[in-house]
Length: 370
Image (cartoon, rainbow, N blue to C red; front, side):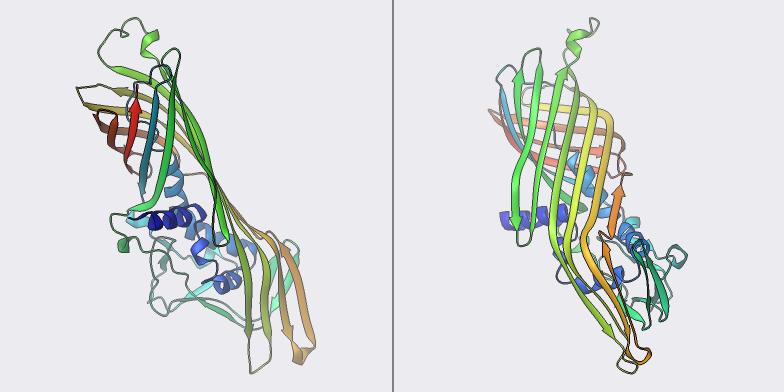
């Protein structure tokens, strides 16, 4: 991947649907027309695999040995973390009983529709809201008199991206050795902008040699450390909705218009015990630990919903604020990692694999000065 493609993937991963904001703004408006509850329900199922893969990826790439640097030692390492999304999560079951207004048709008799990473739905598949429905929002209710229909939303197709099994998550770490075999690690990416989107990343970690405090094993020929690290990725993207549906035979009209922001924040914290053994230029390592992944995704702003029926002299309007608010907290859990590093003078190359809820492959390269 060249740097432009990598930058594009960072933005796509960090904002999740930033690449959809213009191309599918109409579909967002139609989804929101079903009310806040249905919109949140649909978006949560659509986005969960991509968001979880990204969050787990943020917890990786922190280390490639259990041995902290000596005082004033430095390490700069860049990694790519790929948290694999299972095939079973590329689609989700569209169960009409989970929605107040949404119905599905034209899906070949199947109820499976794509998630963010599921590619295209069945040709002709569409979601619709029947006419003469009362839609309830926290701010009040509105009756839509014409049917609202839209194509089932399309996701990314991971099969079209070479070697991608999930959302690629790049990380860049700086490590500095301190006293008592302790090393501080930092991650930082200043705010970046891309079209109408912006994002930034910050994180810190600490590795400490615990073997030195255990008399029975402190002189044995391996390294054993405890590690704590946390990373926060924040992103936002401008969103403009301008959807209108008119039934020419009756003159009834439904519209959703407004501007706001898609706001995304993911925090990934990991606590691990790491063991490694240096064999000349080759260092195998392993770890066990636990991840805590928390992600919030919100659509903020004010959106005006209108339903007009000229023949009945009816024109309803309601303004809804901040209609989407979702939390994703189920990507964490126990993890076990095995990997190895090769060091040639000051150059390091490493790769590891973590068994966890979303199994993750990590590969990286760096410079290490003891």
